[in-house]
Length: 214
Image (cartoon, rainbow, N blue to C red):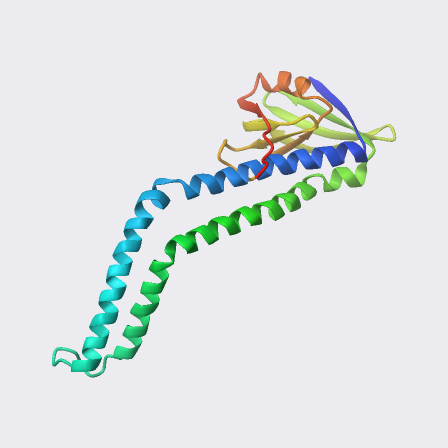
């Protein structure tokens, strides 16, 4: 089966935006899953309470040792260091929810910038070669991608078709699994129907892209 599409600058602009939206959705979904998983929701609050108790107890014990200097405390132990360490520990666990939220927000902000950068790299060569005709030749569970320009066709790459795919009107991104956010294959196409027909005979699940508005 052969799939052909005419690729020009306007097409690549639209395809790059779709690739960006697909990658962004995957990355933000990963961040959301991490922020709402059992560890974040149940375990971290318990660790925070235990850490606060340990930190406060350590600070009080350190001040007690400094004040009374009990016989059971060796003179070579730097009590001031331990008092400071336990104080820092208390501060960290007190602000743990804010730290966790800051990491979550940083991850989301990073996703917008990084996915934009990756999307640009995904179409960099296509943008350089445009205009041309993209040809995908499906052979069993493999696909050969060729660029036809000035009457000459050159093979760009050959890939095994396996995994999951998220498609838009101009681009389809194949991942190893639904929770992945690192792309394996990028397809550029004028419509998804022809590619969908080819993917029916290979172990690749598909679903349409979703634009993130937040």
